[in-house]
Amino acid sequence: MSPTLDLAVRGGFVVDGTGAPGTPADVGVRDGRIVEIGTLSGTAARTVDASGCVVAPGFIDPHTHLDAQLCWDAAARPTCLHGVTSVVIGLCGFGVAPCPPDGGEYLLRSLEVVEEIPYETTSRGVPFEWASWPEYRAYLGGRALGVNVGAFVPHSALRYAVMGERARGEVATGDDRADLAAALRRCLADGALGFATSRGPNHVDAFGDPVPSRFADDAELEALVATCRGRVWQINVRTKFSGDARGLTEEVSRYATWSATSGARLTWSPLHAEPGTEVWSDVLRHNDGLNRDPALVVAPQIATAPITTVFRFDRPSAAAFIPGWDALLDGFFELAVDAKLRRLSDASVRAALRAAPDDPGAMFAPRFDTWIVLASSSDPNAVGSSIAAIAAERGTEPIDALCDLLIADNLTTIVQVPAVNRDHHAVATLVADEHTLVGLGDAGAHVTSISNFAYPSQVLARLVRDEGALPLELAVSRMTARPAAVLGLPDRGRIEVGLAGDLTVFDLDRLRLGRLGVAHDLPGGAPRLFQDAEGYRMVAVNGTVTIADDEPTGARPGRLLAPAS
Image (cartoon, rainbow, N blue to C red; front, side, top):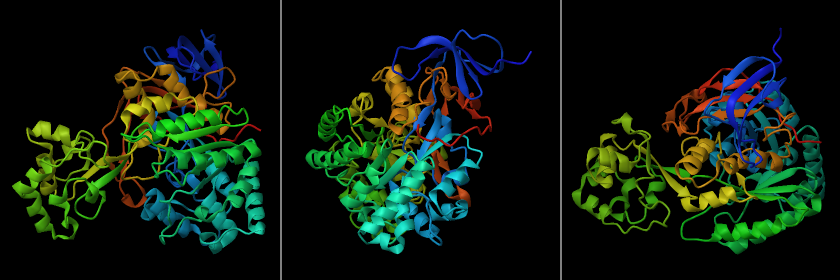
């Protein structure tokens, strides 16, 4: 007798994504869809024992920059190792399509500057077998995808394709606006989730000029938002680093007005929380007011961990800005190697560093329990450990542990440090807010500085289990049903009969982040941060198991996602 189910997940605790209390139940999948919940009848081609585990919808990562990586890694590692079954690309206006003839190098060089994706990698791995955005989507659809992929149309790429070199410095004319809107309309008809752009002041191209989207005036943006009726659009905001709640809320209010007029949903990034300021809570209150309008959906994008950067001491880096370290850093990066090593060995310099005033609110303040070693040639076992932990193991002070490591490594040590979004106490409030959008993992980008792609595992293991800061059901809903609703994907994000068989089964007691390290697995051997996880009994994409007991199965059942018509 033939099995009646393709997949049976038995004996688990089902948390369905809606925020409702979990309940013991089995889940059955056939032909990529959930067909039974409760006590299953019949037999299955594959049965997964979920005893002692949570059965949740597959996590949806709404903010990645995997546009290039999917060309050489259709499994989307390591994102797929953290329970993620669907990813979204094209954010902040950056991507690899559309691409005019001979325009590939400009797009890739821009990705290198803005998103820190090495050109040596993308120039090898991105084939540019397309010109238009629909052709790129068709290219992805022909790949054996390990995850589902939804996409925004990236404004800078669209503008460059439509306006040519004029996109890099000119305001669009009326004819340009009409051409841009027509091109976007074709992409939306072909399955784009929406439109993404940036006015972020740090977004510059390889020439040091603002990226094309930053030359768009309000008339151009309004025309493109008007094309997005019934869809979502995303913007990286101009005032993100201002520390000015009023300026930020005034900017967002303008975009919200366009969205209400056009019938489009708005998601913007980033909303960060810094210690010693209430900007983030002021913005949440303002956003709650915006969402009281039934015609509006406004979703600030938030990160669940600090956004990091790296310190290096062998060449100029953000380490130059460590507060109170003048005794070491004054002229340090102009010194020869031997002189640098002598300064690091100087007992009076180390004493001055230990005596430096401690301002925990300052960016790059020496919080050694959060400074993580990413590379050390002299002590590979130090990789993934904090400077504080290394000092405790060696029985010394953190300053001495760091200086000793730098000397032993001949200055090649690399240290990851928090840069922004450092108010850990605010995170649970930001996640719990009903109007925010959890994500900002930036998977595929900032490959040697940011590891927020692991955020689903971090939310569950730390915020839910270890700290008890969030109820399990709420945390799951924020990573499943909430992004599905904002993105316009009604068949994803919940465990419900008739919906897609995207499932994540995890043992909450065993769940933990793997050791953070550096892998040299990009095309050309370029390095990137890599971190897996333990505790995932199973991940299924469209009813096919892609992760079994933390290990990839090699299955590639991912599909292209399109919004509901």
